[in-house]
Amino acid sequence: MAVEGKTIDALSQFELTPILGAVGKAVSFSQSNLFMLVAVALSAGLMLASARRGALVPGRLQALGESAYEFIAGMVRDQVGDEGKKYFPFVFSVFMFVLFGNLLGMLPYAFTFTSHIAVTLALAVVVFITVTVVALMRHGMHFFSYFFPEGAPVWLAPIIIPVEVISYFSRVVSLSVRLFANMVAGHVMLKVFATFVVLLGGLGAVGPFVAAMPLAVNVALVGFEFLVAFLQAYVFAILTSIYLHDAVHLH
Amino acid sequence: MRRVTTLAALAATLPIAAIAAPTGSIPVEGMPQLAFGHPEQGPLLIGQIVWQLIIFGALVYIMAYVALPRVGAVIENRAARINADLEAAQAAKTEADAAMAAHRAATDQARATARAEVATAMQAAQAESDAKAAALNERLNAQIAEAEARIDASRTAAMGALRSVATDTTEALLTKLVGRVDRAAVDAAVTRELAARGRA
Image (cartoon, rainbow over all chains, first blue to last red; front, side, top):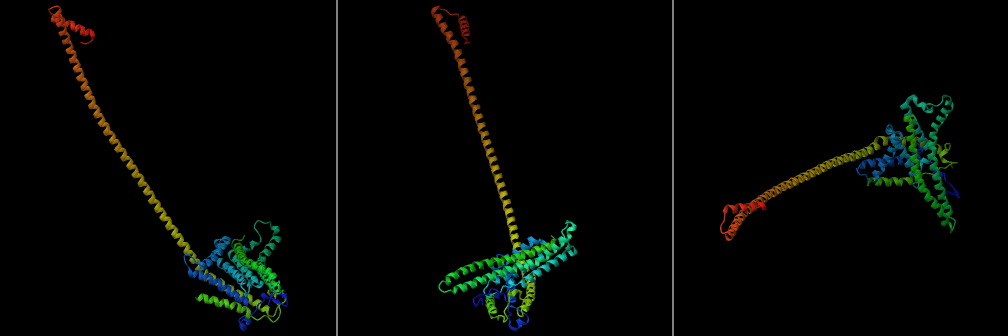
């Protein structure tokens, strides 16, 4: 699929295909959604297995689940404070969804749903709406003072308010595009260098030796992609926490 | 075992689902992620978002109401257990410290008592030996005094004898020389002579 008529096709890996036959086609259930289900099953399964063991001295699996729990719980506590406790499950879900989406994408044949701007944008919109609703519920109309910092000269309002509003809404874009661009770039690079391996490998006697170079690059890239997978999930979660902090405390 | 089987089945379905999926018949121009106008990709993109919202909502629900409270309970249990153990250890340490202090106090007291007893014993011994020495001294002094008295008596006796010896000698000499003796005169002369020499 990657090499068609000696051209590099790095983008077809992002195409959606309906699964589950006619039913899937009718309800537009693509392989992307299947991997979302897998991500949910794995993350929920990890936490449930970790809790079911419930040992005083945790085993490896339990320690993994608990360290994930404490990592995000600590992040929310540090960023939002004690009021943030009730938003912890939401931030945790966001983190696990993105993390498992990224990590599943590292498996061969798997589909990286976080490489779809629609998915990351939808997630960012969910975060944005949640944060805004939290802010409105906590502060009511006072929330709008967020867009005009206290003590600023009133005559600057025509400049400050639009800037603040734009920066508030640009959260959606920055959240979604950051994750999307990172995942797409990584997977395109992997695909391109993997195609090089195939193309150069076919160059007769010297082929295998020349092909070793892009192969080495790919090995390094895989490691790098694992780093990015964790890092982007972390960034998504911590930005969500910071936005929640703003919503709870208004600056 | 059951979980392993489930995982294996899951792992097997992933590639199958991906491979078995038919490639779209209409080629996609540009990035598939932005192909909202594509007759096949477009509906799938929209459907993907809808399904995502449902699936993510389910994840949040599971995490918030089932999984995370359980994990949190386990963690809190452990923290409570550790705290209780720490408190017990603290209590035990306090107790041990108290016992140690009591032991040290008892040792100190015993040492002080022993020292006091030694001191009294030594004092008693000293007093006893002092008394003995005093008694001995007294006895010796008495003996010395007695001896001196005896010496004095002997000397006095000797002195008395000297007078009679001197008188007798004088009488004998006078008898030989003169032939007669005036006893009273001889006594007076001896007495005078003795007084002159300080031996009266």
